[in-house]
Length: 329
Ligand code: AQP
Image (cartoon, rainbow, N blue to C red; front, side, top):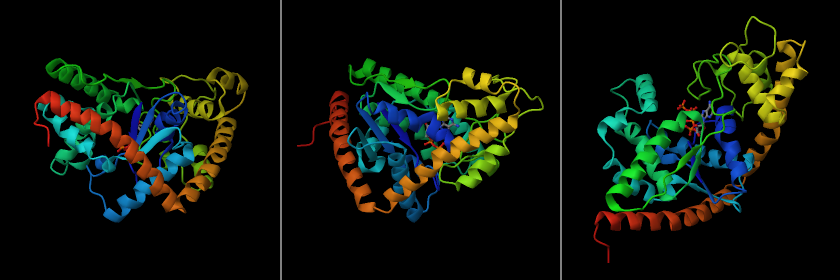
């Protein structure tokens, strides 16, 4: 099991948590899990060095606050394991230019930035992600729906390499929970919740003041109807709120629909705001505790990098050997 998250400025958002990190926490109990903060991916767009350093620690603190346990999983920072960049190059040389050009995330992100400003790193970022996954021989990759195409690319490249040079890589499958695969923007439920949201009101940052979070929930876009029913096509806003409440409370959506019969959207929003505040308040406090102890954080990361490198170095050595690189004596 392998997955990663970017060291985003400020805070993880609710989509990151429900779509990915929540599954990471559950899967560390049953799988040999490798989780990383992908700082090499972060530099595909310009980063201020001091902020990147702070955001990387902040990301690690949030992962621990969310429930990752370094005794149960391997938690590390991508740049601490040089094999990612090394296997990334190999994978670049296996990927067709047209194939990389079809990645929709690149198209979206480069369109937002302007084609001339997008870097070659942003273009090849899915290929580095392929290397991230294959280095650990991961069977499954817990991610949100927006990453499905990149996992498909990973499968294609693993099969291509194995076909050309002999069985080397495990061909991974995406682990995407249907219910939380895509959490939508609270102000525009047609688009996924994203850090590049058009309005901050649509985005729930986990480290926001809980009062701000409650306010955002209460001003979420719904529809002109009054019935609380899950219907993604006709009632995307209400369905999104039901999904979020169901996941946070553990109550199935059917039960929630029944319990809100005859009640208005205000009741649903009040309950969801309460559930959100209940979740983010201890999350914020735990994150701060980890941030206040950078030595412990760094020692967790040092151990994580050592464990990750042991696996990554073996895969890379085998890859180089299969491809015909002379062994370094
Ligand atoms: N809205 C979402 N619903 C479900 N899952 C989501 N993920 C992201 N948004 C949603 C999942 O979170 C994991 C980490 O993604 P990332 O490292 O790409 O985080 P990010 O850059 O903060 O994600 P954004 O906000 O989506 O960034 P932009 O705006 O740059 O595209 C992944 O598993 C992802 O699927």
